[in-house]
Image (cartoon, rainbow, N blue to C red; front, side, top):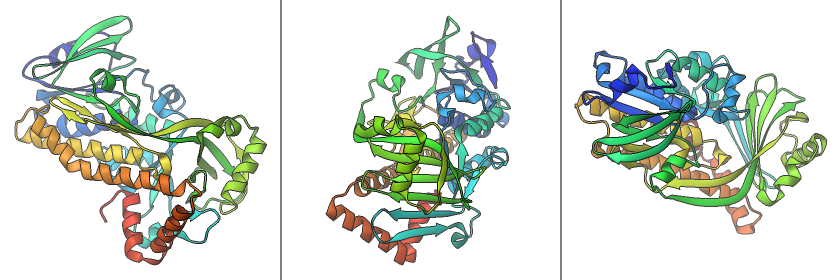
Length: 422
């Protein structure tokens, strides 16, 4: 990885006609993961001289777990990684290091407060080591950045795209870094700068939004009893509560609440908040003994109306920002990155331009079904399991009972959760 703060020989070469230049705008979890996939599959052979990759990130990139917190994507939150995501990280050579800092999920327990019926999914029932894994984002960022340093990806950080316009055969970018501005040409521009993407907005790409009128309270909880690598999803009339196992017998809490009550929760002292959490969640995981400082994030479904144009792809949260109820947002983004990489590999083999619209449409055609299905499941869970409406309560009870009693339905649900083919 080359950290660049001013025009360099490498950057100048990228604009030559003989070389196809990929620019990734956004160096969070998705942007770096995509850069690693592309580096492995486009730059790691004798044809690599025909391609170059530049990653642009607004914040400094530092591989230290403590310093990684300076990048908003690598904050104090945690992420759930599906088995499918673990396979992708294994392909790019990160999983060996990630295994040292992840906590496996061996059992998933799904229940509905105040009603009978629950679903338990165990990894042993599907001959896998884990249903999924939980990792603190700062550790994920540290591992990804260390791997990035081993590649030939050019990194501009801290830097910001201040102007972007389509040109024949690509995009022209003005990039500001350390009080200097340089011009880049991108044969393929990949927008990966988050749900509130300024670049997406500047390109005139509209979004569809669904405001759930909810917020997610995020905190780490210490447990008085061993968590036994069980993840809990507890649905309540106000919204779901998820507990994901972490190291040192802690759990990552994702507590969805009505947004108009956010201040009541966040401003409570830890004792009051623990008492309220215990009342809402129950004692399936035992007693909560300590609560870290909570943070709240508004929850809205965001979908870009366009994900591809000639020489342009919108990916990650900039393309689709999901409710955390099923923990599928980052996993879906990783599958997008994987599919895009495969399509660009195919274009390389066929000596096609990487930004050719037919190439990018092929990516979207292959991935759109996965996107639509994942978004639909997540959106339905939110609307069905975040209400005290009697008819919806009956429907969700029937759903849980069906999953519990039907091995086929349960297997399909489990495979979807694990991010692998049913």
